[in-house]
Image (cartoon, rainbow, N blue to C red):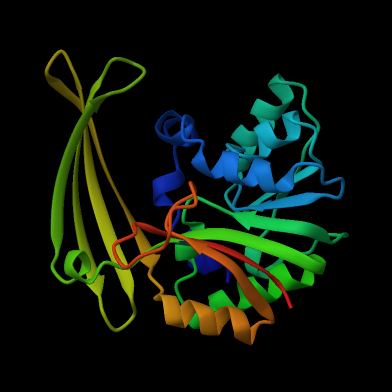
Length: 254
């Protein structure tokens, strides 16, 4: 399934930009640190990206392994860990074909990475892979966006501007279109870079994201031998309701 994910990598071709956009977000880190406190066995961070969570969790004394398929994101994660002299195992592997030499009490996947698994087969393969690497009673924690029918039912166009670390003005124009049959949202973004009001560079990228609905999710987990411990509407443990932006899924092996 490696080819499926590599075709969905355009948004991640600039690891430095990724860090610039998301490095300050900590709600998921606080949730996971609270739960993982005191664990001694290896903890597996799937789709770890640039190590946004892997590194601070390792700094707290946890035994961390970061797994990602994207070589550029992993390279940045390794460099950041080396700069801080932190010992972390980073593995370039497909999360649906995970092959580590040990099992863990906790596997997690954040950043809505679950939505990159676009087919039923890839979702099944992911959960099979996670299950194979969990100790008895081990837990799997992940997040995915809650489908909002009103927002997804019509194509959306958005424009955002901001100043980056190089003092450039960035204008991003995005278009989103949802396929109700496949439950996949396709998003294309055109980005323009300006210096002194002069356009110096332009680029386009796209990403496809699969949405799952709560009852579909419950059945998927149950079919792979997981039981749901909690379903939250945010990493701050807000109650999940129909208008929640996210589904924070905390489950364990039966």
